[in-house]
Image (cartoon, rainbow, N blue to C red; front, top):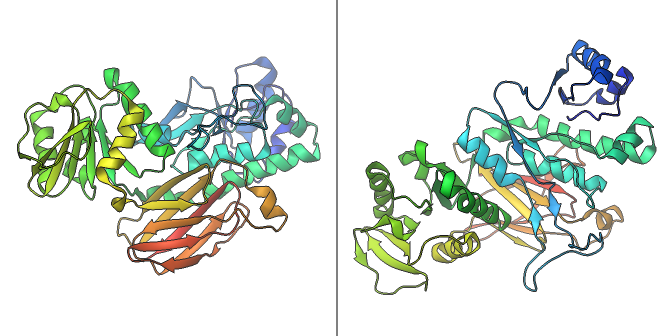
Length: 411
């Protein structure tokens, strides 16, 4: 937690009682020395942004949620005529940092930002990072911090929601050991000339609920592409001979390669039909190669083209009546259990609180499962969720939920 600068008396630490908060980011200030000493006495670690504990990667993030109107009005949002409002999320940043530094715990530094300063905004910030295995550094806006210090009921209620959400994910740490389910693997060094395209591509894939795997080029192996339908090589430089051999073996076994013109000459034979105007296709073994006719430079086009080239028949998760929704599908190594974590970035709570209907969401998950249990932040235990078998998956009919839901599936 980032300790508010206005909380200058040791008694302010009582708000941490019975919470999972065990580390405070605190400014070096004489006014806070007594607070820091008392925190350490109580077993709570204290440090600054420039002195993080070993094994922690701090990522600078966005205040997550729906991007509102440029006018600043809280009752309008900016959106295209055929698209949902833009969602700011740190999920892809958490996953990229974890892929590049697999031994680190990822903390997200994303301070609250007007005009999205609602109680649910804080819950979304926690869930947005934690669902992908990271931790949001709890930060309070000045008004909320003052309200908590003054013990106002509304502020204390918001604080209770914040600490309860953090405690929920702390109690479900085994979920972090699950491996991400994926259709496409994104291969890159995500640095230098490849930084913008690679990172913005991950942002867009995440926002459109594509299930992807991040594959740092320096650490790739045959296991890195196992189980994927396609790989996307987006770097401007040509792959090394070993990497080229690995990827082409993946294609020959039935996978798809999507890449740019920098690949140069390729084996295989031209496909009889080019199914995409921006890509030329080749057949190799049981698989297919799609090479862009021009340099890969537009992440929006690349994200959409990758979906079209692979096809929706390989989808792992789909939503009906989802709205501004994010998802992360993972599973246990033995594939006997799956976990679908779902984030709702738009407000969904009032209808539920009034006992109404209309917020129900249907989620389809690929695979054969016989049981499903629903977890939400307002419940201390899971409960069965209505499930319907389909030819190649299951449909989950969720009750009205607010900011977050997780469904545990058992094969």
